[in-house]
Image (cartoon, rainbow, N blue to C red):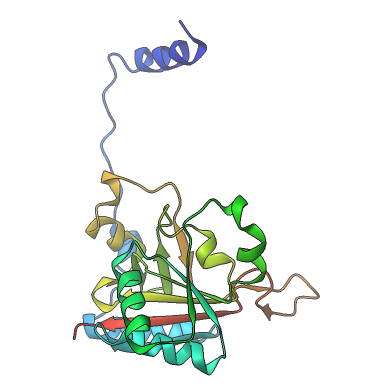
Length: 223
């Protein structure tokens, strides 16, 4: 018997004859103070995110690629990292090809070791989806995976995030319950409330110190 099997066996045997303790958690402690009318969620999330230098743009779910192109051209950016295997990546690619945009679309389709220099020094912006938003704190929730790795939202100087208005929840607990996180937690969850910032140096707040210097959120309403 391996050491691992021996340890797990002892843990299982230690529960023999015991009675599970009832769950006495009162969910109102983490939900009651943070309840909002559905029509107020977008405005609250937007006000909190804009307070920390986030750019928020409401738009329709059928015209957001046009807005992305405008934002990139406004900043004179020449490339954008996206996930062509995702629905929003395919939609963006189709729009850029149809309108002959000059911005080059890059795909994160290889191990980071194979293109670390290009990723860290040449990629100017990235676009990712989100799992949803939290109105209570003005926060985006991302579940990085092999299609949209964590570095996509952490390395490029400009991060553009797509957020469906219907997926903005009052608080994190409500989101976890509504989306049944208990059925399969991710290996990594990112909570993003604004561009990167630090106050380590003489307690002076500076943005863009160790991550995206700009965070742009597109809130997608149904067409």
